[in-house]
Image (tube, rainbow, N blue to C red; front, side, top):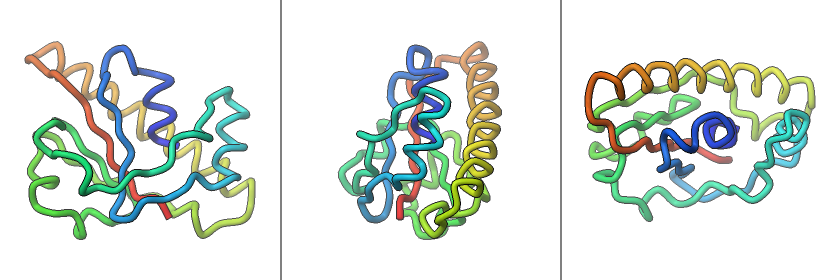
Length: 135
């Protein structure tokens, strides 16, 4: 969901947007459904394997669900690292829970994009990377 919001809201400002996890994962069907309610298609954006990415290509990283402690140090040492506390939607089967998580993720993405926009005005900021754990 976070990658979908980021692409929808800021792909032209932050062109490097990736979704990766410690293990690759598919997008939960309820996540696809609740995002489609906002006309954001995430059906073709499964989480890729973290080791397939070079951390040097990312200035900003965020991690969800408390999995930051499991990330290799080179990911934790990016210019901006945030860990978001959010319920893991992969363990849910209620569309209402997915809608609440979607709302929480949208708020976090908007806050991060505002912060990055301020940073971009202050310095040369060449990219934005996003990592999140998929079930």
